[in-house]
Image 1 (cartoon, rainbow, N blue to C red):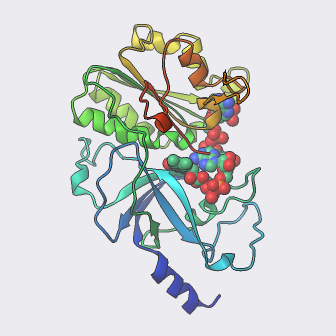
Image 2: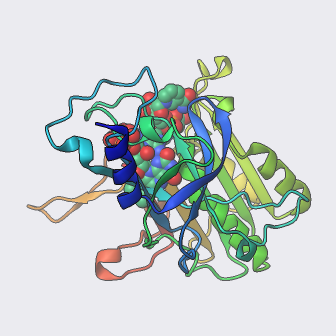
Image 3: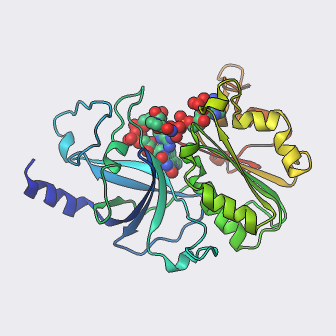
Length: 309
Ligand SMILES: Cc1cc2nc3c(=O)[nH]c(=O)nc-3n(C[C@H](O)[C@H](O)[C@H](O)COP(=O)(O)OP(=O)(O)OC[C@H]3O[C@@H](n4cnc5c(N)ncnc54)[C@H](O)[C@@H]3O)c2cc1C
Ligand SMILES: NC(=O)c1ccc[n+]([C@@H]2O[C@H](COP(=O)([O-])OP(=O)(O)OC[C@H]3O[C@@H](n4cnc5c(N)ncnc54)[C@H](OP(=O)(O)O)[C@@H]3O)[C@@H](O)[C@H]2O)c1
């Protein structure tokens, strides 16, 4: 494709600019995107869409693509939860009304069993000032609406699944939440904890805030892999909170790897609930009296979840 054709496609499809990129490691970053339009009203926890054209370059060492004729002019779009730096440069809670960008926390997927990943190899070739597509619609049921000021809030995530929790934590702290807030994130390596200094600072400033980090592939994890599920089953979460998990006054938010979440299906023949294997958090919590959201029938429970794939 000629440079003129590419310039025309970019002009036609793109409506936002990369304001900045904070590299956590070569395969993980927090990117701020400034739209050409006013940021739509939205709730922390919701997601938007990022997009780039097939015509954009991909970073090396990713699964090879086999594009079909016509693909080269198409836009690739994916959903991304809106994240938040939570604190400003002075260490105070960020004034989000004064920002003209949205922050996203994204991992580079180099290869996938379901076929070559299309968008992230292109997103990771972006640099400050580059143009891209940002969906004007911000959507999703994942938000803090059901939470009362004194409730215990558990944010449980894997990898980049902590993105919406960062924004929700900002909202809870900004609105003076008095109940305990406990965020736990499970990653492969320590270098995948992209907001660790911020969480450490929050723990210093807010005695009711606690951030738990779990790694699974560091040398010390060889014989000791602790998943988010294990934190609950072992009673570790309850002991950190200082009391058993109480379904009447606790909301649990789950985001990231669908296997960690473990949403059940309904057996069509018997209409029974079938939990997936391996064991996920939903099964453990439902057996302790928690109830999951069911947006299809407009039911709000106290287990809320966002699956990334
Ligand atoms: C509501 C929603 C919000 C999302 N928010 C985020 C976010 O904040 N940050 C983010 O990085 N991704 C997020 N995702 C995933 C995102 O939409 C893309 O699927 C992902 O960036 C990979 O895009 P791709 O085109 O490169 O590969 P795809 O073809 O879309 O995905 C290929 C495979 O990569 C794996 N994968 C996808 N996303 C992730 C991930 N985040 N972590 C680990 N493995 C993954 C899965 O195995 C998937 O099948 C979200 C998805 C949904 C549905
Ligand atoms: N993170 C990296 O360093 C890295 C580097 C290169 C490429 N990538 C690519 O980036 C993508 C995302 O990787 P990611 O590490 O962010 O996400 P991920 O693969 O979802 O892993 C995040 C965390 O979830 C854990 N996990 C896996 N299965 C689980 C289960 N059944 N229950 C509970 N927890 C579970 C993982 O542990 P396990 O250790 O057991 O998997 C890991 O600690 C992948 O496609 C990967 O190939 C990542």
